[in-house]
Length: 311
Image 1 (tube, rainbow, N blue to C red):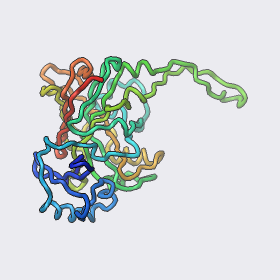
Image 2 (tube, rainbow, N blue to C red):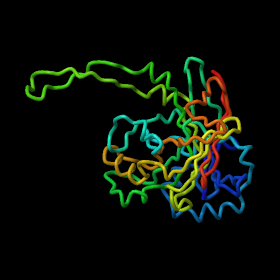
Image 3 (tube, helix red, strand yellow):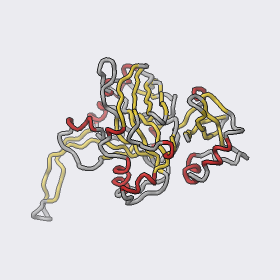
Image 4 (spheres, rainbow, N blue to C red):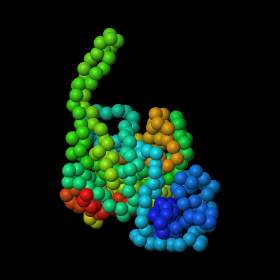
């Protein structure tokens, strides 16, 4: 089942995919179905049949005509996995031997067909097409072999990135470390540190959706084609098979440090293989200069498209 969140007749409602181009609107007073994706996650899979039954009498609307919200409008956290595509291997001069993550704020999320809003001062802003995992139940210290049992479903996310803001927010400084041989002394260590609050977390830097495909609809999350198009031209096409750390690896690792809660989102990392007619890389698609639309599609899940506006 594919489920999304929409603003419909003055309230948040659930949208359930009916074919490729239409959605049934369910939920609301006296409907017998929840209007909130969190209720669906909490009651899944027991509520699946009730949702299916509700489609019989639900209004059906064209996908293109709906006002889409992020499918999970208020995730507690969006955990993003950095440099997680095997195409990065030759470019990484040094790094950890485990997933590296950062947190993207929920306030950065926007829904399908909603505008990315940029300022000239942001500098270059480029797309990062990614598979995202939606957590279905509380997860702490999860064993890898059990990790997929904690997945409610999968969605599409575009982890927009502003490299020039990253450069502006990078410190080169002398970090203080305790001396190994004298607990009262200190050593200064030359360090580089960058913080992603702006370059990853600015408003509208997290287009996501429109659908969550429930886990039972995605038998193998590592056999999905990821495509990114800019103004209708293919920029990159890759496959989730090329993720260095798989979904189970990431859930197990993250849950050993941070509790994952229902509705949390994990962005798995960027599809990077060049596929545009000119061999263009996603990093060359400067939305600040070139505008939109920008589109990300993942097989079995759907297509996320967003325009670009200037603030």
